[in-house]
Length: 151
Image (cartoon, rainbow, N blue to C red):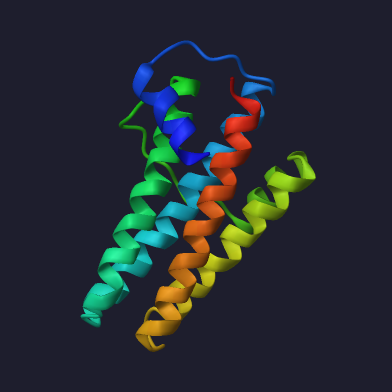
């Protein structure tokens, strides 16, 4: 499914959206907010010099950024817009507006990113890589959902 989204993205053809742009904008805001935690986690991993985690993290973040870029282009968002981290109340409000399947996926993503942020400063490398792989799987799930709703 991720390859389907990339193919649409590369072909730059017009797309039909089966949901409101506001909902896609909400997903975009949530993904941008979680990205800030992921970047902070990477700095902690870098500070600990856990080189074994660099490649899995880079691959996961590349996929994650492609999803964000896909949404940004669909929504005509400005590339240089500064995104702030959402408060827990804002996150909860947005999640309550989303369909159940995507809401649970986003909740899993938020929990996994918080785990990574917490564990990246103290846990051993295999646990960190396991969390990175789970975030990668969640990114695949989000790509599948976007593939279903964006034609």
